[in-house]
Image (tube, rainbow, N blue to C red; front, side, top):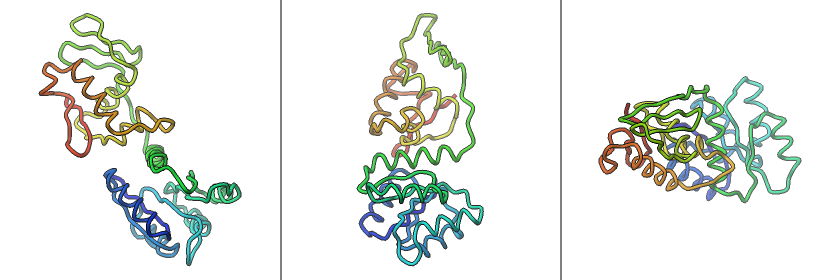
Amino acid sequence: MSRILVIEDDPAILRGLADSLRRESHEALTAADGEAGYGLISQKHPDLVILDLMLPKMSGYELCRRVRAEGVTTPILMLTARGEEGDRVLGLDLGADDYVTKPFSLRELLARVRALLRRAQPPRTLLDELRVNDVAIDFRKYQATAGGRPLELTRREFQLLRVLASRPGEVITRPELLDQVWGLDDYPTTRTVDTHIASLRAKIERDPANPERLLTMRGVGYKWVP
């Protein structure tokens, strides 16, 4: 779970973003003006800030300038008016990391949030090979066998399994799996993850209806049990 601060003076947008982030298993903090947001950055140390540029009391530009001058490296995602290229350029020059233009696609915004959070984390080492039951998988060559016979896995299934198996025992949320495997350019739904997990279970579990390795954490995501 990441702590995300939303600084936005439009109550409907503020509430909608906070609710959406909580549904993605994040902790959402909110502020309706620049001064309150600036204070929360210092007090709560969020993992990411979603920042509207046109704010009362302290503009998003000034807030961004101040926190960067103080050495704060927290990723900042700007919200800007559509077509205002100058706003985006100035915000990026002041230290923002990315932007979304209003009116925005919620799916795109959440994808960009996931991407920024991922970039802020140290890189993880991924497995090159995996053996489970009588299944042997070479992730570098995209090859798999079951009992010595070729096993057909799709590229997405290879990638999904590699991410999960590289973090044994750790629950990985559906949104994080979407970001890791499908990336920012695609905006599939979390049901896409569920479908691929079901397919993987059918191919590598002894009893797909009672999986031993690919376990569901209801309402959160999945984990790999070695």
